[in-house]
Image (cartoon, rainbow, N blue to C red; front, side, top):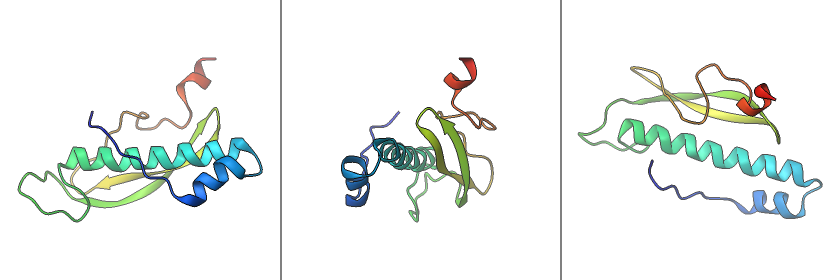
Length: 106
């Protein structure tokens, strides 16, 4: 997998360190990181960034859909990319998975 560079905004860092509860800050941090990982995986799968035109491009983006994922830190709202001629596959979770695997096994 490619090396990722994650960008965090000031509001997220404020919520993480100075927010009401650390759990909500960790939840927001994890949500932001996973959404950026999903975007990077979509770009890697398409062989092109958003709005980039090149000859190596395999498919085109077709928006995204919200997905709730239950984890140990709480519910995460993820945005999964849609592709025009196929489906996006990710390593983070399986196609119809709604909760973290460790929670199901324990």
